[in-house]
Length: 408
Image (cartoon, rainbow, N blue to C red; front, side, top):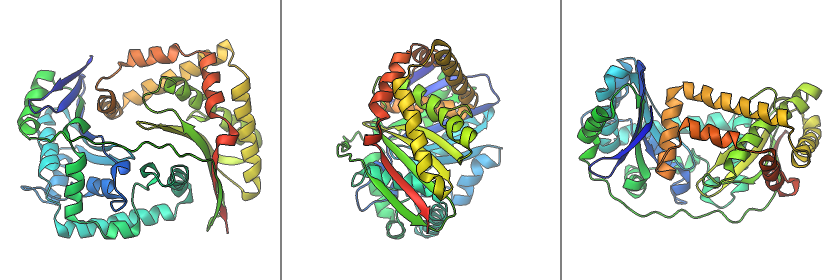
């Protein structure tokens, strides 16, 4: 079935894909995240995600959390540098319940002071968890190093001090400034007709007046490669190294996604895994990841190793980068790389929650959604020359920033 994008009577966008399944998924996706905070709001986007479930004008926190759980559903949310998602998965006959609940949460949350104080403690414990997990913490600290002084470098959780000083007024102010008409999409993948879903969304979302406020994000344009070592109470060296890459809207994003998967993706046959873990046994975890934002991207490699092997691993990584830049993929190498990537993409869409979030994300940034077939065609059209070109633009050691956590 194709994706359908419609606008409700108040201008709110709804994207839906009808499927024949006993399980359905519905979400409210907001193009607002950590980078939209001011310097005095660090962690506020994430705190909104936590506290929006703490009671509405007609439900307390207990009733909010139990509304979907009691019928076997799941209610969840997440925050990133640029987005905040609120979503629920449920038996398909519970669509009305799901849409009504998310509408109530989204428009009528009251953020009671007592609940806010309790949730501050929860977030502070979340911060403590990451502080005690160097393999997790280094991802945030690496972004802070790369994007130093820019909102993209802010830790999503905020700081202990910023969390302690969050207020109900601050929450409402952030929502008013960022949860605006052009920055919100309703997304659905489930067993319901578009006509019936539109009726439900008009009933629960369409009557709400959502302001259309202009918002400008400051672009990042001050990157300088750095090398930094930080001592931590840990037995292993944790290292991240990387460079800026392509934004979500750049054409080279698809060949770079494919290159990243070949180089250090989730497959055990990635070049980094084969060349460093399997060949030398120098790391338990070694991976590459690529995050694309609205105006810039970030390519990063993470590995954990014995401290005495830290530099050797980095040398081997740079050796693999050199191969990627200088040796074009052969016909069969390219064929199997594409087959692997296509298979992984299709497997990810087996989880229809992922598909719902994916099409909602596309609607947020592009106001349209490529079909799976169109996405696969882009991958299949990628050439060995395309991959070599992006490798030579991004996999340049002199442009890399490196952060290492080493034992005290």
